[in-house]
Image (cartoon, rainbow, N blue to C red; front, side, top):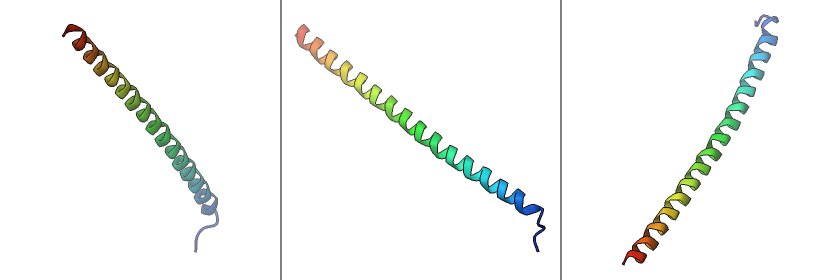
Amino acid sequence: MIDKRIIPLLHLECSVLALLRSASIQLQQRLNKSIQACAIAYLRYAGDLYWFSVSRMKSLA
């Protein structure tokens, strides 16, 4: 038989775990968005650098 004094503590622990899980999911989503934004910015920079290099080589030729 479970001691009735433990039930509120178990309920509180489950609530805290649920909140932590929710916060963890939100942090993962924010991190994913940040990583995607960095990757997009890097690819744009690389693309601009490539086209700058190509146009520079054409002007030197």
